[in-house]
Every structure is written in structure tokens, then in C-alpha cells.
Amino acid sequence: MILSVHHVGCLVANIDDAIADYNILHPGGKVSEVFDIIDQRVKVCFFSIGIMCIEFVAPYGEESSLSKMLKKTPGFYHIGVYTDNISAEIERLENEGYRKVSQFKSSAFGNRFCAFLLNNEHHLIELIEAEDKIVM
Amino acid sequence: MDSNQILSELNTIFKDVLDNNKIQLTTATTAKDIEEWDSLSNIHLVIEIERHFKLKFTTSEIQSWKNIGELVNSIEKKTSK
Image (cartoon, rainbow over all chains, first blue to last red):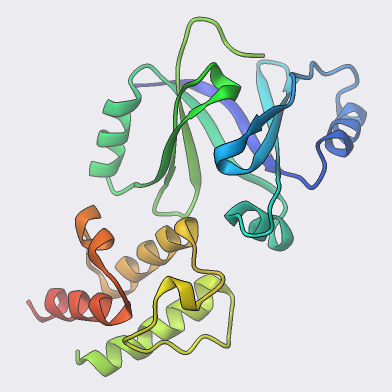
């Protein structure tokens, strides 16, 4: 089952610039380390606001999907939610018409499984395998 | 609906979803021929194609298409039932 929202993903050109901008919105917001997700050719970093985070995602490599998306539509593009059983949730959502885009282990979440799915509204959802200890 | 009509309607969907008015699909077109057609945009395309033609594809069907012609055939079979 889906447990909670962890973050909203935000495409940015430069993580340091994004942190500086969101420090204006929320001075002193807690910032995680920067993770290099090599398989996806992105660098990510979490900026905490209250109980939720913004995940800054900076793609590198001109040919990646996200690099192309960044040029056309930078900004918020996915929501990340914790689940206690990622395989069961993927199966349930696919049976309901969601489409799996990718599944991978993410160093940003302690090498736990994550998966991106698109729903019929073309919204991108990231499932994150939950663990007691939340990476921040 | 015949294959030419399906191809024409697919062309409109591809132009819209991929935001590229220069796209001119043929039955031989593959993802390598269109810069904007990648793994993520492919799912966007599938969703719009399903919505437009009022049908559903299985994951194995989606993975089986080698070119636009095979997609057209798949749509033609489903819409003729």
C-alpha cells in the first residue's frame, strides 16, 4: 500500500542554484547530500520543507529524456511516494491502467527499489520502497 | 478503419505528443528516426494512442512493435473487432 508522500521532483539545471533559490522561500531548509544516479544520468538532492521534500533533479548528458524535458518544461514533474510493497503496488497500478516506465535501485534511497509509472493523466509517479529509516 | 487512416491519425498524435510538426510517419518508421521518441515519451504516446482509438494494449504488445507498421497492424486488429 501507499504510505506517504516523500517528495515532489523538480527538474533544475543547477542544484546549487536551486538550493539558493529555495533558501529564500524557506531559509535554513535541511539539504541532503548530492547523489549521482549514474544509470539515469542525473544528480539529485533533497531540500526539506516541513514533513516533505523537494527533490532537485539535475540531468546531465544531452541525450537523456530529462535533459530534453528540462529544455521544454523545467520545474515540478513527479511525485515520490513510499510504499511498503513495491512489487505489489506496481502490479496493482498496472492492473488499473498505470504504465511502468522504469524500475531501478536508487542510491538516494539506500539502494532500495524505486519505480516510475505514468498514470492516464500523463502524471509521473515514483514509488519508493519504504524503510524505517528515511534517507535525509 | 483502414491502415492509411490509422497512420494519418497516428501522425497527428505523434506531432502533438512529441511537439514536432515535422514528423512524417511511414510504416517503416522506428524510434531511431525521431529524436524526441524515447522510453518516457513512448509511454506518453501509448497513453494517447489508447485514448484516441479507445483501446488498450498489453505490455507484451507494446514491447513487440518493431516499427510503426506493426503498431498500425495492432490498432487495425483491435478496432476491427
